[in-house]
Length: 229
Image 1 (cartoon, helix red, strand yellow):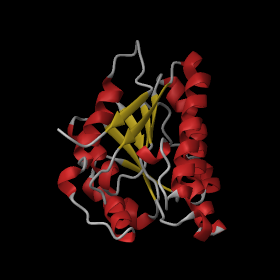
Image 2 (cartoon, rainbow, N blue to C red):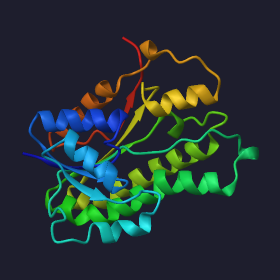
Image 3 (cartoon, rainbow, N blue to C red):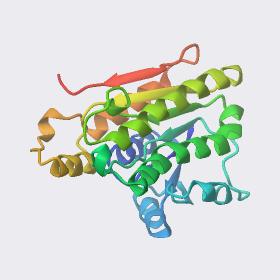
């Protein structure tokens, strides 16, 4: 039975991933922004453990994970949570940049650092949920794209550094997914949203499970997912 630490389980891809992993009997540690969210996640996933910490405050992550019940071994760390705010570079103030880079880059880096001993103990797997914007920066999403480009660099350095410890690292680049974030972005861009031409969260979760289940003689270093039959 595998043990996973997951961010973003409250909705979208994270919720679908938590549902899939619990359905097959895996153990889950879920990061919750606040106590209300933690209570809701425990109701939805009764067998999970929760850690209350806000990714917008990465300096608080160490204290949240300092208890005696913190996981000693982890088969995977799944970075699914993220934020995306619309704004041309000329209209994006330092607060937008700070919030985006903190949640999408600095917090995953800090959480990975803190959980590396548990991942090394299990020869575990770190998975970063990136975006098509982490490969090709669209207009109006400069801060988001910058955070995802940087997340790609973080994953590549980590992969090389952790190879001797047999910790695998994968970056997943999904196209448009039918999530609340995607719907908000379409509304902000004043674009019609058609879920029929999007990936489903369940489809992305299935791909994540495939990544985790790949034999240990290899690593899926980068996985691109695009809508379409």
